[in-house]
Amino acid sequence: MKTYFNILFLLSLSTFVFGQETGRLNITSTPEGCWVRIDSILVGKTPLTDLEVAAGNHNVQIYPPQNGIWNVETRELTVTVSPNRSESLNATFANPVYINCVPYGAALYSDTSFISKTPVYLSYDEHHGQSFRLVKKGYKSYEFVLNSPNAVIAQLEKDDSFIATQHQPELLGVIPKQHFKSKFTLLAVSVATHWASFYLKNVADKKFEKYERASDPVLIDQYWNSTKKYDRLADISLGVSFASLAGLIYMVIWQ
Image (cartoon, rainbow, N blue to C red; front, side, top):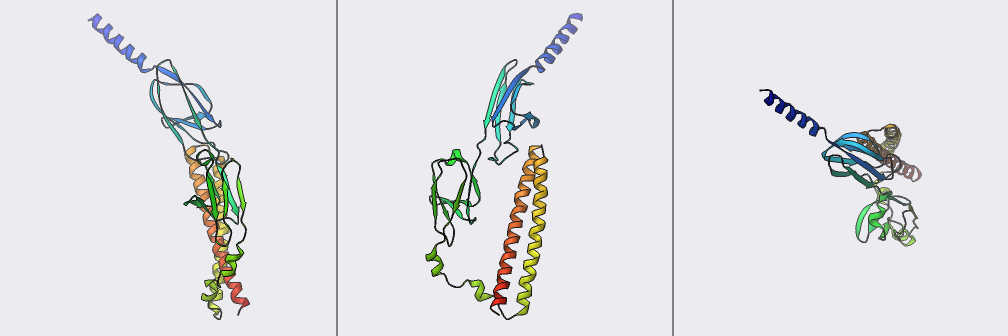
């Protein structure tokens, strides 16, 4: 009976010892200061050296830096850690190239493929050496080759031939100049959307402040997406306000 209990004790002890076997992880990134989660648990920022973890398979998520604008994809890696062994992981995040033009809102094409409206960020590593074209109605096309990670800010030239061939805008022929209600409606829309733009911009600013203070990667993504959303809505509201004001000015002048 004593021998039986000794065997049980040794089996229990070996199970406990093997269950506690650990290895070490070294995690680096370019640039440094990236948040790291191991098996969904936030463990700190890179570089992490001699991080003790349980032996076995682990899922490692490395997030892009908090400061500055970077490609927003997350690096997700699977690593097998052996007992008393050390494993190393590295993630590299490329700072994207900023592309814009004056005036903004031009369509960016790569060959015949539409990419986005300016302003836009592109991965330099992915698009290095490619030819691009900026197209905006009423302006000459602007072509360039992405040979540098520096920002591209294009000054678009007006297309005189396009302006000369244009007819009177439809807006001028549609608005009933003689009606007071039309003028009042345009004024009300202009004022309301202008105030809406001001309100949405304040909301965006508050979201951005929370984004700057946040430390959890999930909240960082949430606040950043909210900031972009309300900024976009503010720009749309302001555009509607200016369009309504332009229509009102036309009606007053040509009454």
